[in-house]
Image (cartoon, rainbow, N blue to C red; front, side, top):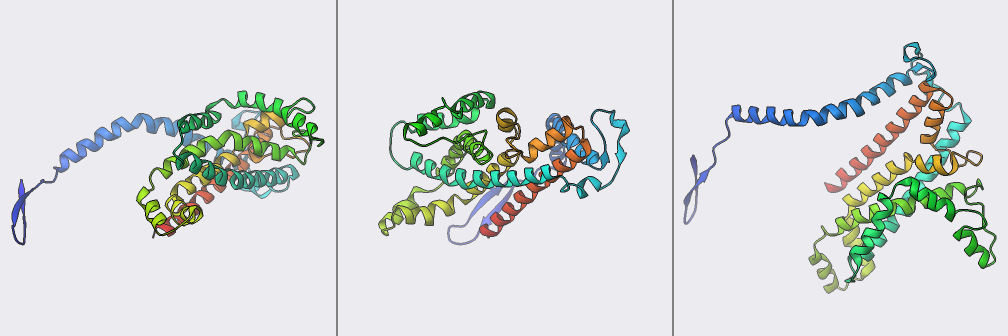
Length: 314
């Protein structure tokens, strides 16, 4: 073991740990690779290989009703004709509206509820968090059964309350003007608890000394939120924003179970259009091209958010 001499008054010799032998480092690397290999194999088999196969299929013309050996190479033709179908264009528009509404409603509302659950010194906050998070862990099919009755025309709670005050209720899931909004409300209710828990966890990382100093300086609640909470919570907010985007753009279960893309295609999303094109019409190549496009949009948005965060941290 070597020593390091510290100069100055009261100098002393401190021990310095010798570097590990390279052979030992190589041995640890082999053991790490050995223990990680099962997880890497699973990721490769069930994630990477299907992704590569999807891209390969997107470059071919193939019906899922025939063997995969009968694929015909078409190159980028499936991507070039992606916008020729009016149903796909409508699905992309519906998806964009759905994603924007989900983000605009969920993120600010989640932040507000998280602050209400974190800052006030109230009893029972833990129970409220559990109740909020339960909406995320309950199976979607069970939630769909509940919300199909909530949205039921005539006898549903929403329609009954509106009728009680003299307002004619809309056809929540049968009216093209309201069906997409109804699905957004469903999504916000289901996912809000998950994002609230993430934001509360982020709030716990903010030093309380900052708020105490701000109070001494005369800063009110709004000023503290704008100058301390939001800047210190920016990483968590970006993560919640990204997760809201991913979960919204990949929405499928509520559409399949509640509306099946109707009425009049008003709730047809890209994810549902992929499933319908592939399994109902057998257009595997075109649906794969649409799936690759959807995946690339998620990658681009994630990269942009990462660049923005990196720039703000400099």
